[in-house]
Amino acid sequence: MPALALLSAAFVVAFEQLVQWKYGPAGIVGLILLTVGIKAKSPAVSSAGAVVLALLITGPAR
Image (cartoon, rainbow, N blue to C red; front, side):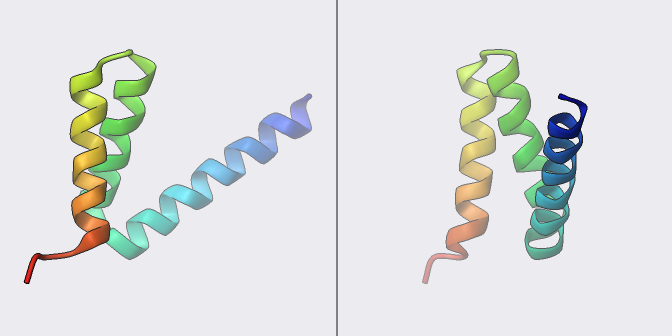
């Protein structure tokens, strides 16, 4: 069980680093909002995080 927890923690840290590297601080904010909204069962907060991430992934409108 500790190996699974360690592997899970390593995956989360690696994913956060990838998001920060690719999308910068706004990506981390979106990821945090999404995570906190899901944990707190708050649709408004998780939706805000999802929108931030979606806007970063799709890029500016042309």
